[in-house]
Amino acid sequence: MINTNYTKEGLGRLLYEQRKRIGRNQGDIAKVLGYVNVNFISMIESGKSKIPINRIADLVDAYSMNPEFILVILHIEYPDYLETISQLARRIPKIFKSVTEEPEKEIRNIYQYHQQLIEKS
Image (tube, rainbow, N blue to C red):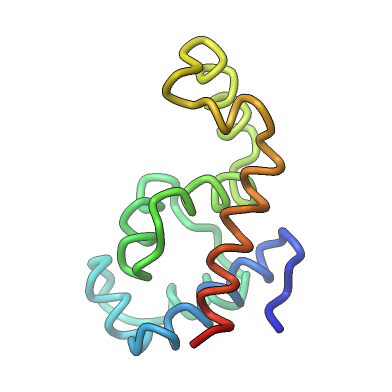
């Protein structure tokens, strides 16, 4: 079973399992993200490196995850940014309804959805 703790290590393990599920290696992910070698991908998957905020959307795409998973990464890696997004969302609730009503629940649901996808494969 995948670690359900919302930690860098848990996130890294989830990304590792997702990469295996989609049949890619670290080199494939590194190439999609424009990195020359796999060291940075290895460090992300082991929870030792922070995902650059400007690369989160690309990383989610490279791992073939739902765009909503960006919220999980923000929650773990950049909680202050997620709070800022939540504050903005309160001003435009039609767009960000689920995030403004119960952000923790939404993060948990998105994380668990991806966890279940991996466990089913």
